[in-house]
Length: 299
Ligand SMILES: C[C@@](CO)(OP(=O)(O)O)[C@H](O)COP(=O)(O)OP(=O)(O)OC[C@H]1O[C@@H](n2ccc(N)nc2=O)[C@H](O)[C@@H]1O
Ligand SMILES: Nc1ncnc2c1ncn2[C@@H]1O[C@H](COP(=O)(O)OP(=O)(O)O)[C@@H](O)[C@H]1O
Figure 1 (cartoon, rainbow, N blue to C red):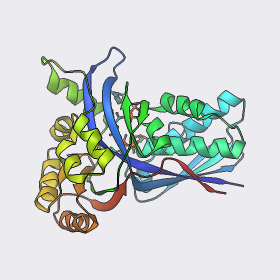
Figure 2: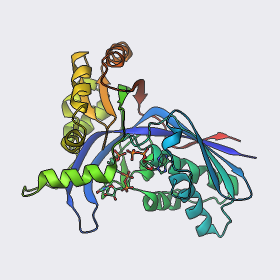
Figure 3: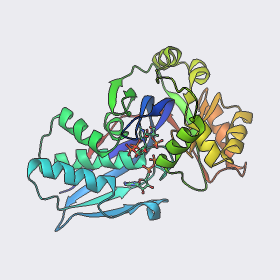
Figure 4: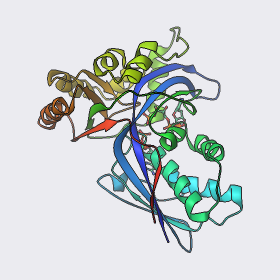
């Protein structure tokens, strides 16, 4: 018997970042939108806990107990007095270290899959608690759709979305480390007054209406200057997408994946084709959001 769970990637349509807290984290107003790029996490009973991974970026994924999927299985098992002897296989389509929360997706996926496999019947609240222990982005991977994350991004309020938004994602030649980007944010902001992060009313209204032009006018990412400072070539990718007709071009979360909002699928295809031949990125993907959160596909 095995259980497979499908989990989406995310883009941050707004990422407002406050000053560093005493615990090293930053308070956020983090508006997440789940998009239709997915990892699939399959769990099967085994003699001991083991992780395998397949996909274009599989060689960059740790297969030891630091893998977020393994940590999720161990955390659920510990709470329920279960031996976490399970083979976790990750079919990885979400770019690694790209600012699209691929590791978080695998953590949420493994948690839901193990809950189903072991019949632990954890409440949604317990699952969300474990997610928050695993990482700031993990609760959103479970929930999907669109949500406002406050605190370090783990406290979620579900948001209304009035229609599908069309996106193009450009994957970069190398990854960026999330802690390094937050450190660069701190360095760039030294000596300045960093305001409390607040969600934009215009942005929430644009999401609720499903209005791509209004969303394009309202998107923002406070980590973008830090990501560009560490990876200046991303400016060329952003410019190539804008020139090709994207309504908005921004770094996805801590980067280095860049995200381009298009008015409709035809325009998205045009932007993707231009980016693919621009020589400014590794690969290009076209998709839309919102997408469902962690979903059991069956065994
Ligand atoms: C920036 C965002 C935007 O959604 O994601 P990515 O773009 O990397 O996917 C998130 O805040 C990343 O969330 P996640 O990747 O789960 O981070 P965590 O494991 O909780 O933390 C990793 C490190 O990032 C920094 N961190 C993370 C979240 C936060 N609110 N403040 C921080 O300063 C800290 O240095 C922390 O040690
Ligand atoms: N299941 C996993 N998939 C990908 N990366 C993982 C996983 N578990 C742990 N990691 C680690 O997390 C780091 C961040 O990866 P990822 O979650 O893909 O990016 P991001 O935080 O930029 O969205 C990776 O470099 C890797 O070392």
